[in-house]
Image 1 (tube, rainbow, N blue to C red):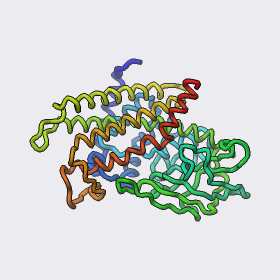
Image 2 (image 1 turned 30 degrees about the vertical axis):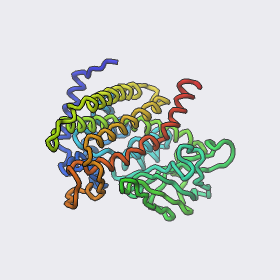
Image 3 (image 1 turned 180 degrees about the vertical axis):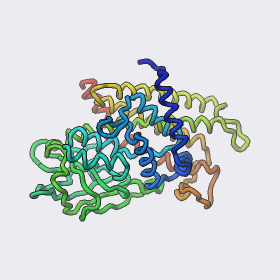
Length: 395
């Protein structure tokens, strides 16, 4: 692999940078740069800006409204967005359910759902995990009974990220109890406004409402919202997870965080020597920087594989989440005692309440706690190692 960008790719990077400088709203940039809470309105507003430019879905083919970029251009775009302070786009729609609809959905479903995902009008969430069916996803018990022109769904989903904002949820449901557990699962698209759906918040360690429990009580879902064939949902679920795990590498986000760490390391705070002069800290920073660069090259290798993400996506998921957790841990150390006190309200822009230590320390502890989840969601890293052992090593 040629590790140097071509003149055309460098020119593309400059085009993206100029677009971001001219079009990324300052209020959104300020929030993201300070790692404060982005609002639903901000996320959707930024998606609309990208939509008008034709850059709303970097990985989508042109036939569905994407820019038709290659893997390198996608990576450049996402990296520059992260460094500039753009909010993260909605993966659940753009990177997860959309590829499933494009690949396995019928023409009516493509015409109905893809435009709303692309424009940001429709906010999607994921209905996979259940109590007792997280990493062992095939054990799910939410049922969908076929009755005439609809399914009747009953059950519970948990850890539903940003489900409080969602217009739609894509769900794995059990439509048969015969044969192996994987053989009786179907893939349904469900309107969150349907009677019988209730959403209850789960408050996390950092005090944030990011995840939820979603309950289904005799929820009627039209049969035309079934993706692909009944009882074939496990195939579609594995396809989706391959795209999710590739995205979990988060190279652009981690490079932006690495840049922030380097800035902090060079600062002299409270009359103390800059952290960059501490040999042990500098060595850890350099080691992590090398691991991040290796992760980036691995992502490029997977993205340029014509057969699409396979078991290699599990490698990206493991290394991406490990690098991310290490970055947030090192950020905590860089902030020192200032990062110990976590005040959730301080994550709101314009907060004027009590603080402990430096203003930019407010998100550090919360981010550290939040990112403990990285090695669990999307399939725990232990499960990913099993996948690698079986599908790559043949054990």
